[in-house]
Amino acid sequence: MLGTSVRLREKKLTDARKDYRWQANPELARLDAMPLIDVSFPRYLLDYTALMSNPSPKRRTFAIETLDNRHIGNCVYYNFDREKGEAEVGIMIGEYDCWDKGYGADAVATLVDHIFHEVGLQRVYLKTLDWNGRAQRCFLKCGFIPCGRLVRNGHQFVLMEMSRESWEKARTRLKESVF
View (tube, rainbow, N blue to C red):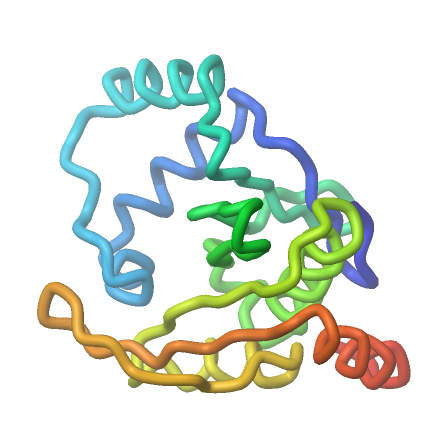
C-alpha cells in the first residue's frame, strides 16, 4: 500500500531484529504502554517465526517503510470484527530520526484507507495515552475524533474513532495538504 511518503508492506522475518530492538527500548515501550520485552533475541525469533507461520485472522500487521525502502516502524489493525464492521488500529514509528516528519500521519492515513476501501469495514478506533500529545495530534490530523476515556493497567487513555463516512471527508482534506 503506497502513501505519500511511506509504503505499508507485509512483515518479513528480516524485520525481527528491528522489531526486537524497538520492543526492548524503554521509551518506545512507555509510549505504547507495554512492558519491555524480557526474552532473548533467539527466543523472540522463534516466537516471531511461529506468528508469521500462523497469523491471527483478527490481526494484520504491516511494516512501515520510507519510499527508499527503510523500515521505520509498524502499524496494525486488530480486534477485527467483520460482523460489527470494525477494527482497532495502532502505529509505532521506531526510528527517532523519523519522528515529526509526517511519516506517522501518512502511515495512519494509508492504513485507514486500506481498511475502509479494501477490507470494507465501517469504523476504526484506537486508544492512545492521555499524555501522548504527538500521537493525538497525528490521529486528529487524520480525522479521528475523541470519543471517550479508558483506564487500563494504571494507564489513562483517550479513545478515538473514525467512521468510513468521516474518513471520506478527512481524505479529501488530507489530499489538499502535505503531511
